Image 1: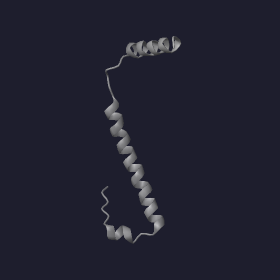
Image 2 (image 1 turned 135 degrees about the vertical axis):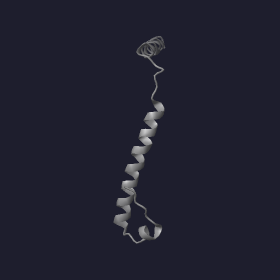
Image 3 (image 1 turned 180 degrees about the horizontal axis):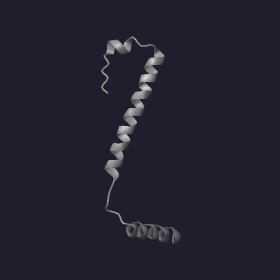
Image 4 (image 1 turned 135 degrees about the horizontal axis):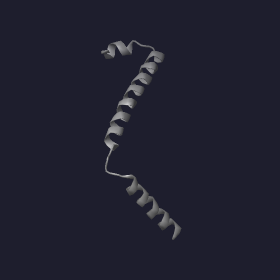
Amino acid sequence: MVLILHYAQISQCNVEEKINLLKLLKEDIFSLRFKKFLNSVQTDELSLEDITNEVEAVRQANYHA
């Protein structure tokens, strides 16, 4: 569904309608940005062994600190 609004139409809305429109836009934009973020951080580069080794190294460093 495509909805095209012009400024003249929006300016005729009362404050409550404008707030509702803003909330809808925020929700829509948030989900799009979140999906884009998730796609950008997906990786196959780390294995469980890599993570375990890093955790053990940090534990050792904290233990000896």
